[in-house]
Image (cartoon, rainbow, N blue to C red):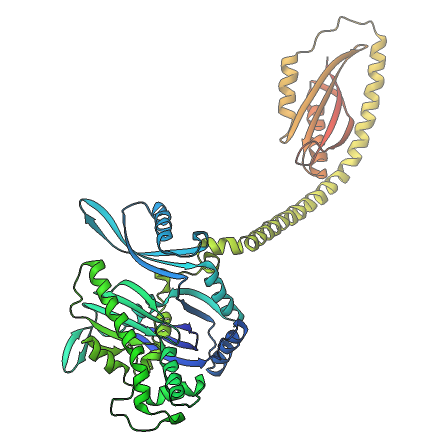
Amino acid sequence: MTKSSIGLDIGSHSIKMVELRHTPKGVFLTNFAVKELPSEPGADVIAEKIKELFREKNIKARKVTIGVSGSQVAIRHISLPSMPKKELKEAVRWEARKFISFPPERAIVEFQLLGEAVEEGVKKLDLMVAVADGDLIESQLALIKGAGLEPVGVSIIPYALWHCMQTIPPVYRIHGTGREARKGVTALIDIGAKKTNISIVKDNRLQFTREIATAGNAFTEAVKEAATLEGAALDFGKAEEVKKEYAIPKEEGVEGAKGHVPLQKISFVMRPVLERLSTEIKRSFDFYKSQFKEEAEGRRIFICGGGAGLKGLKEYLADQLGTEVELLTPFKDVAPNLAIAIGLALGRARELNLLPEEYRLTPEVLLKRYAPVALACLVFFVLFGIYLRMDATCTRYGKQIALKETRLAGLQSADRKLVQLKENKKRLDQDKALLPRVALEQPQWREVLKEISHIVPKKTVLTHMSFRTKDTAKELRLKGVTFGGDAKIAERILEIMQGLEKSPLFLDVRLSSSEENNEYSMPGANFELVCKIAP
């Protein structure tokens, strides 16, 4: 499977972009660009420059990984006792309070578990912790969103350089001898315009990092100072051109240079800047030795950033530090100022990602972001399903009603005969009442109740039953509730009446009343039947 990723390095002097293609055969460079920035640019200017860069390179992808550094960013190698993951997160946040200069409530803290070890019988976790000021992260993300891009990761610059170094083949050759690029102590030095980042790596593991103020602009200012000493006036831009063209002149420099500044004078004023840089690198190795109680044997240095391309700098540092110095350029014909962007584009920011939770496409974030939409869709489909079911039910009931109406029409003639028979029976009963009355017997209630229980259909409940003797007749009143649609209710009441009529225990069955019942969650109707108990 092939996929692309973009790393965006936003510096104080320029914007660097690298696009990589990840394939089963390896990682390949597909696009890169550098866009210079004006002096002290605002957020709107930077965002517009990013848009120009993507437009000029015709880059359609919008997902990018960015890097952060400075006093509002810290990275430390710490060790903590083994504990559950939930407790570990809080413990790391508490530990991070010790090495940040901004309010801890603004801190975004991430960590990576590097391994486990047992010290004095106690199991400990080896962790790499990264902390950044949330305000800094939000300001950088605002730039990215202002440029119409989508951030997928925020890494720290030392981590990006570390990832970039890991792309170098395990064995590289210098002066005809093979050396293990991932063994021993290595310094990764990113020389930017305003600051230089120094990171120490031991056996392919990042140990510590620090920043110093000696950087590319310091060399430019030195050129301006040389011009001033010679009575010439060079602005920053002209001094930058001289620096790039002549860089670090040798002792026997030729007379004359741009701005009529002797090359020997340039070499003279650059010397203190070079010495400060080499001294800080030495101090970093010394700090490593004292902090980790290890000798920096087999050490070497990789330099990158815009300042790393300064002519003669690599040779000067190798001479002063007595070790190998190489440009950090994993891909052929790529300048060292793209090293950070390459590290960011490698797509490993997820290992130590300072991107706030709300920007990540985790299951929790997706659930929170799309839960209302999903719920609305679910409700719609449920209601639509209910509608379809009700529509099918209504259609079925309509057919049943039509069938019942047909049957009812056939029963009307029989009903008229039944009414006539009832009237005849009534007259006979009246005539019978004129006869001498005999002692009335109480009805056999057991048989009456049993017969009623067999007649009452499903979804029908009898709520009241009363009995009285009127003249010589025994009258029974039945009240109840039946549930369903209108057609179903009529059908069930008719079924009860017919059942009572067919029974030898009941006579003169009639419907006294019926009305709609709204007391329950389903449609229903109250009814009252009156009949006589056969003697």
